[in-house]
Structures are given as structure tokens and as C-alpha cells.
Length: 352
Image (cartoon, rainbow, N blue to C red; front, side, top):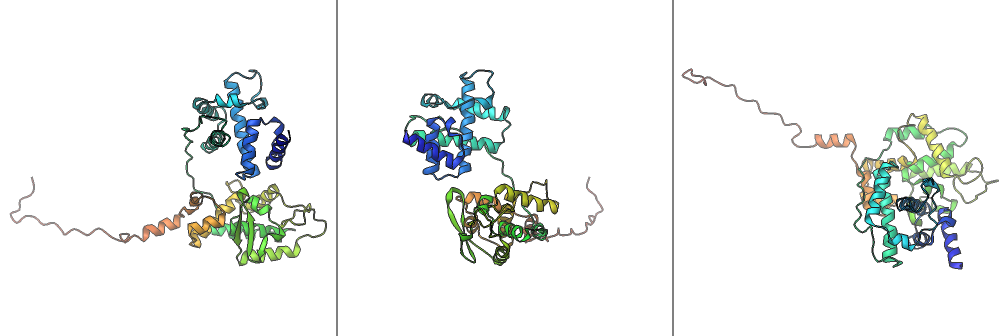
């Protein structure tokens, strides 16, 4: 039907999914994520992959596939409403256990899978009304251990900027400057166009869920952008609107930007230390909070976080801050009072 084809086209455009293998009941859910919830392409794909893994597991558990079939070859095209209705909380907990024992999934990955299942069943219970009961209603999401975000120090950030050289040094320096000063996501940076600037000091950024926000540019960013624009290629450029152009005269892809950042991280000896493009976003947020005394709610707007709780991971304290806090305690310099010298009793007796 026309409706079916429209759904397929929407999913293909948004998520790069093999929609021919997507059953209608999942297809409808993904369409809802894309058109109503305005989820990003990557997010929609993550939901789909989590659901595909779950229903593959369920088919094995229910003995609905040949035992010799490889897990990755199990089709879920035949998943229908009857199978979805049959899912129990026990099935889901067994799936969570399978995610640990057979797939070695971390708590973070299992929490994401639990969230995908909860959102899927909630949709069909409360929106499509295809289900009377939600088997995930009492599902407990695995707790994710809190870790301090990894970031570059101020000195390392300066060293990274000073390491830039080569034929594309103005472009590379501009990209690193925007990452370290504005805390942009990788996808946000590669999506920038020449017309993304509202003014010399105002940049319109499109973040998750296609939500736009205004980013204000400091002197370092303005200077770096102006220097890059002077040498930015114009002739033969395939995407004339793109701000950052690759040596193939195309819009720089996320993969190309990652490779460029990793090159300079390696140059200053930070390769293999857990640093990446996203860590530059952590760095920008941390430097603004620790050195600029930026209020956390302002930081939330700068980073484009929907929830304040997401921003709070950047409010970690540096070792120096904790040392200063300890030294600022009014009792920090108190010393024990010296006891008076003891004297013998006048009669010369001692304790027995």
C-alpha cells in the first residue's frame, strides 16, 4: 500500500535500515520515533538493532528457528502482533541475562537495550493501543556506574592547538578551536554550513533531534574561522554550502574529522589513552566550568543538553580544586595544644 511504502521510505531515509526486513509492528514504531519524536538517524537505528537482537533471541528461546541457524542470520520479518503479545517479563530478564553471558554487554549497553524495549512496549500500549498490558512496566534498568569524564587539561589543550601544521593547518586549527571552545558534538560540527552564522559571533548549531541552539563565539573562534575562510576552497567543491571541506573537495565526514583529531592527539602523545573527538567536548565543558566559573544551567544551554542531569557529569572537581577546598577549611592549620609537663605528687607516691 501507499502508506506502507511511505513508512519504508521514511525509515530508509532516516535510519539507513534494510526496511524490507522490518516487520510492520516494528516499522510503525520506528516511524513514530522519526516523525513524532523527531529522533536522529543514529538513534532510530539503535532502537531497531536492539529490537532485532531481542526478537532473534525470543525466536531461539521459543524454538521458532532451526537450531543450526546462525544468530546473525535469523530473520525477524515474520514477527507479528501475536508474538509481541506473548512476551513476558521473564522473557525480557532472560534476554538481559543472555546479554551478559553470551554477548558480554556492559551495564551501559544493557541499560540502553532495556530502554529500547520499554519505549517499544510503551508505544504499543499507550499510543497504538495494540497491547493491553506492558510487560516492561516493572522492568528494572541496570545501574550504570558513574565515571568521571575523560578530558584534556588546559596545558594539554594548548599543546594540541600548537601541534597543528600541514597543508590544511587553518582548517584543522579552526575545527579544534571550535571543539575546545564551544563543546560541539562531532555530528554538529560536520553539519555546519557557510550560512550557519547568524553574525560573526553567533553560530546556529543543529543538535540531537534536529533542535537548534545559538552558540556564541569568542575571539579565538572568530579569528580561527576568519583565517580558515581565507583559504577555504571554492572551485570544484561538491558541497558548496559545507563549511569544512576535505581534500577531496567534499563536506568533511565524521570519520575524516575523527582521523584528523586522532592524528594530532597522537602527535602530542595522547593516542591510545582513551582520548577522542568526544573527549574534546568533555574538555570544553570542564574548562568552562572549572576555569570560567560558568553556571551549570548556562553550561546546559551551551552544550544543548535536554536534561540538567546530563550536564552534571561535567561538574566534577579537579584534584587542585579539592586540595584548595581542604586547605580553605578554617581548621586546616589547627595544631594540637601542648600538654603541661606532669609533676609528681608532693608525698612522692606513684600510681600503683
